[in-house]
Image (cartoon, rainbow, N blue to C red; front, side, top):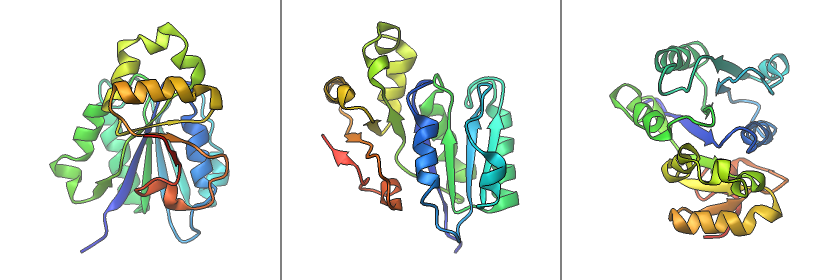
Length: 197
């Protein structure tokens, strides 16, 4: 039986550090693996696509709304094409900030993808400047991302207390992303991060 493709959803509102996080992980990709990144593009790509292709990392953007709603069909077409054309060992999905994680999770765990993909824990990155801004911290779409994610992650020391509060309120495990990611344990449970809850 063919091994399933590990699939990772890295979520968070615009500016939380999703692309930075994924780029850190790309730096430790084994040479013998193919990885793909499916991004709900908002107009500016922060991936060096040509350089990554030479490292067997393929980046594909889906335009025109969040992955699970108005761009649902383009998302499925792009994902199917990536799987068929590249047969990757890992897939990273970076939804737009307001993407509905529950719908994406349901799709990826549905009958069609169940035999192909192994959906890992969904991460949601939270940033201090968002946690302190009511436009985000009291926004229903922002809070829905937190509620629908499996684990919360943060970078900055000043985000720690507010991130802890949010994690307790939503009963989510909380992790601090270390600056030096030296292996792929970060992607596999338990995450190689400093665990707070």
